[in-house]
Length: 165
Image: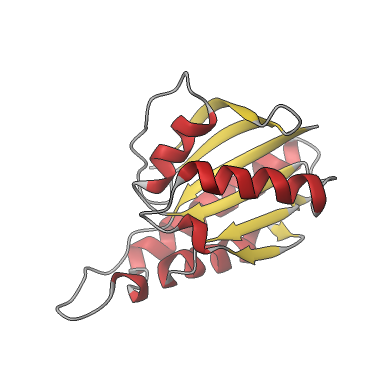
């Protein structure tokens, strides 16, 4: 089964404040705008491919990632949304891959287009874990990596980085 995975970094966030946990930093106004632009681009791209939207959207529990996912959902039809603690900045990419492939085989076995919304450096290391021929990449805020997954073989191929200006 071939699946397209879009790995999206959250939009620009407000700076960390003294005594304010990283997990609760919200998107800035610029972050909201850049995420909306990326989401609208993705919606148009998926429609040109004959898809109606994303079959599965999985998201870090951090506030800025949740806000990013909500904006994506405002522009792109989403079949299901899950939150995973395995996609925070310091998560283990291999552990996330094991969980994602298990979910695709058991819960989302008809999925064709899926998305993860997460953080640097996790998204960078995730691309390199999925496609060992691709080094860790720098993701701009609201940037997306497009990956082609081979679910049976539990591997992927990096297609391209999508970053709108």
